[in-house]
Image 1: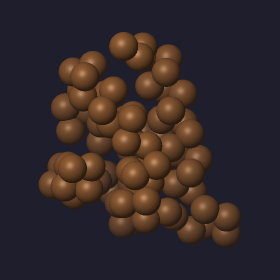
Image 2: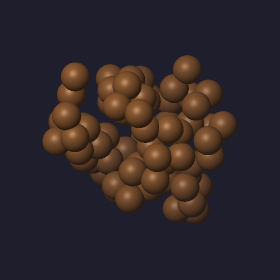
Image 3: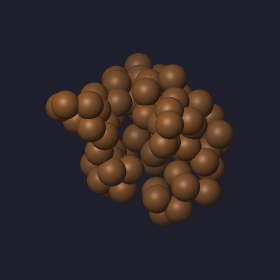
Image 4: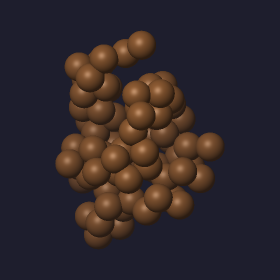
Length: 79
């Protein structure tokens, strides 16, 4: 099972992928597709959707206007 360090490393990579050159942002569906392992690992480690959203927000992965992603948005995108 992946440890916390691996989750943190992948979270940083996900945040970097999210920010596109010129200030753009990657579509959430593309971001999730490229990092499904992180979500699977986070779930196996006991993180809930709100926990994942808190981590994603802290890393800079947000919804429109810089607001945190919604639980429904994230969960439906992942599954």
